[in-house]
Length: 273
Image (cartoon, rainbow, N blue to C red; front, side, top):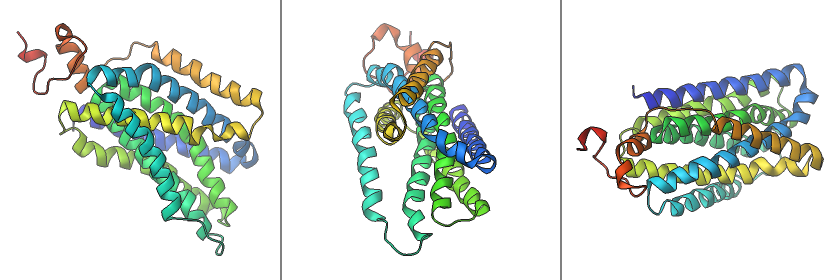
C-alpha cells in the first residue's frame, strides 16, 4: 500500500475517532456540547483558511501553471455542490424523521469529500497532507455534534442519533480517503497538482462559507476569539518542520535548478544529471 494512501486513511480514521469524541461529549453533556459546537467550527475555519492561503494555494501555484483556475473551480464547485444538495433533496413538511435526511446527507457528503481531500493532499506532499488533515480533523468534533443535533431535533432517540451521526459524520471520512486513494496514487504529477489546487479551492469555500455560519449565532467577542485561536494554531503548525514524500515533494527536490515553474511528469531526482 502506498505511503500516501496509508497516511490519508490513517488520518481519516483519526478524524472518525475525533467525531466519536464529539458524540461522547454529546452523550454526557448535551447542552454544553451544543453550545460549544459553533466555536469549534469557527476555530477550524480560522485554521483552514490560514493553512489554505499561506501554504496550500502557494504550493499549488508553484507546482502547476494556471493552478489558480483550478483553485477557483474548487471554490465554486463547493458552492454548486451545496446548491445541488438543497435542490435535489429539499426539506418537506411531514414525517419529522424524514426532515433529517437532507441535512444529514449534506454532512455525509461533506465528510466523504474531507477524505478525498486527505488523499489528494497526501499524494501531493506529506507536509500538505498533515496541514490539511489537522484543520479538517479539528472540525470533526463539531461535525459529530451537529449531526447528532439534527437527528435529535427530528425525533430520533439518543442511541439512534449517536449511531447515524457517527455513520454520516465519522465513517464517511476514512471511506472517502480509501476510495479516492485507490486511484489518486496512479495519476500523473500534473493531474495530482490540478486536483490539489481544486482541493485548495474547496477548503477555502468550506472555511469561509459553511464553517463561518456560527459567527451569526455567538457574540462577536467569542466568535472572533475562536476564529483567532484557529489562526494562531495554524501559524504554529506551519512553523513546524514537517517533511515527507509526495509528488510535489519529489518535484521540489528534483527540479530546483529549473525554477518554480511547471511540473515535468516522468522525471525525478534520480533521472537528472
